[in-house]
Length: 237
Ligand code: TMP
Ligand code: ASP
Image (cartoon, rainbow, N blue to C red):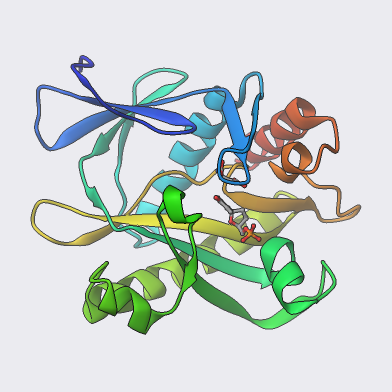
């Protein structure tokens, strides 16, 4: 499958058309940003790791009953995916307080919740991805009530799957962000990526951060953390 015109360039990926109108090629970059693009950098080898990790997890999620855009890995950085219209919601699931949750509600990082939380942000860089609730999403016509119910249910299913999967790798899944899309027939599927860019992943024993927080917070050892989390994934079976 050949790359045709570039359709879109995001902060971490480029998207290309293919000869099949239902299929796109995504190409993962080593570029890293944080705080809505204010902080910029490079994480060498990140594109390869995120591509391979996301594909492995998406393939397993499809088997577990969460339909998603993954079709086939083409090479280290490029993957064939189903074309979708992205629903402009960032869907965040949390198991443990961290990041913006800790800041907003004054809760120490590391407090474990009795049940996972689900929250939505309006995917809009100009507005800084503001937090919104379901009625706001409906008022803005970002998705229908039925679509939001489907998205929430898939997001919680993804959480149960990933939590168990990472636990088997000696890793705690703190929180993560998902994006969903509509296929040409109008069904909702999981899209975008699942990677250390979009998840908080802590070593189960030491609680060492093995994700993009090392970049966001200038903790050092960023490349090593991405390589270590990929090693854990590869050791999983
Ligand atoms: P937060 O605590 O900063 O709201 O982040 C929650 C989760 O979402 C965390 O795993 C990082 C991920 N995330 C993204 O993937 N993209 C983003 O733009 C932001 C702000 C967070
Ligand atoms: N990807 C986001 C940005 O550049 C932020 C993040 O992941 O923290 O704004």
